[in-house]
Image 1 (tube, protein in one colour):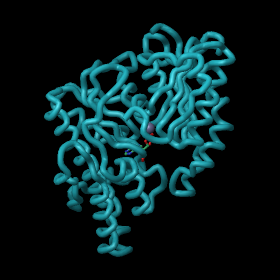
Image 2 (cartoon, helix red, strand yellow):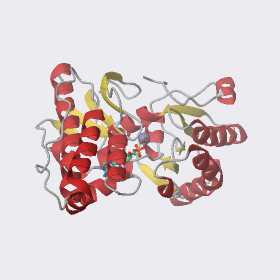
Image 3 (spheres, helix red, strand yellow):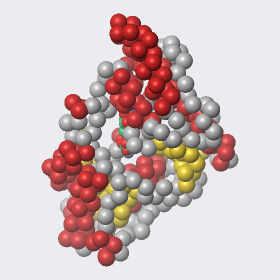
Amino acid sequence: MNAAILAIETSCDDSCAAVLAGDGSILSNVIASQGIHDSYGGVVPELAARHHLTLLTPTITAALDQANLTLGEIERVAVTQGPGLIGALLVGVGQAKAIAAARAIPLVAVDHLQGHVAANFISPDPFEPPFVCLIASGGHTLLARVDDHSSFSVLGETLDDAAGEAFDKGARMLGLGFPGGPAVEALAATGDPEAFDFPTARNVKGCDFSFSGVKTALLYAIRDLGEAQTEARRADLAASYQRAIVEALIGRLTRALDASGLDRAAIGGGVAANGPLRQRVAALGVSSHIPALNLCTDNAAMIASAARFLPDCSSQAALELDAYPSGGQR
Ligand code: KG4
Ligand code: ZN
């Protein structure tokens, strides 16, 4: 498909718009982070939706300006349909429907997780299926078998928390801000990853994940150390906690590669921005693809990338398009 695509992503707290050229290269990728949820220790759904209402239009304008295109030159519009926060999603879906109807251009509905997979298809270095994709974000952690550009099948997923959620909750226990992943990574840089032997859920069978054990282990370690020792050893705690999460992810990715017989691996989702995880994936000894940092955390370029390989909604379906908070493609 050879058309400039405008994509909108509002599934959580980032208002995102991007323009992709027909060849899959990025013309613009704008992310307006709301920056208001930190003081609440997590995303407040109602606040996220209200801020999308304010931020989305200027974000789309910025994406068009940076791409040096007018709305009249856009040939398709894509939007995240779900999963995510329903109020937040509806702002994006409403905006995309309005643009498609007003400009009489096709609308493409995109699953957010397919978007994280499709971050790997972006030019100039697209990674071609088949491959195993580890998707680890704040809301999801799963292993996907990707045989084509428009779908995936699930090889395993988390039985409890998502990996990003584990980072965020661990960060809170360590007195760090939200989102927790980058804060834990920064603190861990000066700590000893072997200092504490936190569990990696090796006994969970197959390609499924579990992060409740490592979370509880950190809680107990903090309780046993007491306030003064915890303060003194925060970097060691962060480094050991991060190591356990990364090893759990890498262990399952290795199992998924073995089980699928594939020797190609990719990653996606916010946790894929984690430095030690990226290093471990690069050192797996298989052909691997690691998207740029701003294509791992939520963005609209990945939604446009997924849309390149998806059909347009019929005009009736475009008018009736609704968001879904969970489920979807999986
Ligand atoms: O994909 P994403 O931007 O949004 C969701 O779809 O959830 O992922 C956000 C998650 C948060 O939990 C955040 O703490 C985590 O990704 N994250 C990281 C890093 N950057 C973001 N986790 C570990 N290391 C990072 N550098
Ligand atoms: Zn995401």
